[in-house]
Amino acid sequence: MRLKSILAASVTLSALVAANAAAQTTTTAAADAAVESEAIIVTGSRIRQDPLAQSSPVVILDSTSIARTGISSIADVLQRLPSAAGGLNTRVNNSGNIGNPPDGGGVGAGSANIDLRYLGAKRTLVLVDGLRFVNGTSASGIPSTVDLNTIPANMIERIEVLQSGQSPLYGSDAISGVVNIITKEKQKGLQLSAQFGTFRQGDGHTQDYQASYGVQGPTTSLVIGGSYVKQEAVRTADRSTSQFPNPGQTSCTDPIGGCSSAIPNGRFDVLGLPNLTLKSAVGGRPRFDPADPTGPNSDFKRFTSADRFNFTPLNYFLTPSERYGAWISAKQEISDSINFRVKALYNRRNSQNQAAFLPLFVGPDAGNGNLL
Image 1 (cartoon, rainbow, N blue to C red):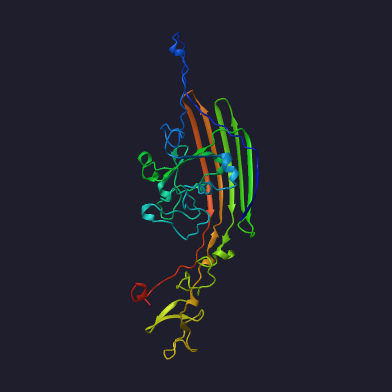
Image 2: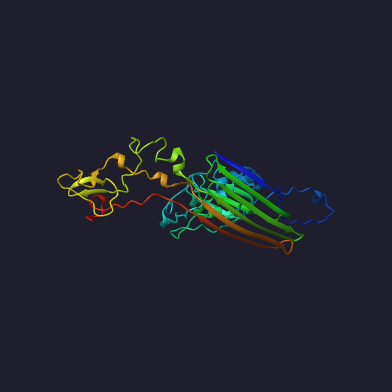
């Protein structure tokens, strides 16, 4: 259970709908007839779409709804949607890339993304103001998904989620759907928010500070903002349900299994005697008695299930991260049909993961030849 305290200033939302209209005066009765205009809503494209008339399901989350969740991560908000699947977030701890780097599936540690309908995050297109957004970083150098942690929450006006395949319109990266993040263009005055959270166990402290300031004139609007988010770690050893590889497991001798046979003391085949391990750590050359390989004059013993390695307590249950963000949005109306817009975003994330020791297998049994 997580406890949160939220302090926020009042939020003023404004929506801007621009349209060109032309009127003409005439003496004919037909010209005096009222003409009902059609509402046009753009969701991630320049094609007319009305969510009340189209068959594709669209979910719209405005900034007020997002603030009410008390969640500081946009990825966590989107991952609560019924159509969302197992996207990456701060509860994923892996010592390397997730996925297959050759096809662009690798992601960097600390990333967060959205996966719609269990088809993979790289098949969910993420747009910002209707345009493709830069992908996150990856150790493989071939990133394929947008890191949602790079988009500050106070920058967002609303989020539109198109929960059906749009590959004919956008390509193969929109097979499972499209997420379009609409950023703020107008704001009057200063907006501040602060959030603090912790688990009832007293760990996993979270700090989230957001600030934005906007000015607005007849033809000009400017909004600037900044954010700072810090998430402290929670270790798997600190929770009873995650102290062993399987829930309910209490020891490595449990028949349910899960502990590793790759142990810190090693497993050896010595002179044709398989499945030997060291009794304890040896600072020099281990002793071996051919007459009694596991006797008192030998540093070896038979490997049993009690010797299996429980790697789980060395991992993170919640990975630590720290994010800094700054953004600016400016708009100048040059004429009734021409607007000049500038949007810039800076984000820096310091994240960390931790995994158990990497096992090394050598020798004939490992399939590497007679190396040991």
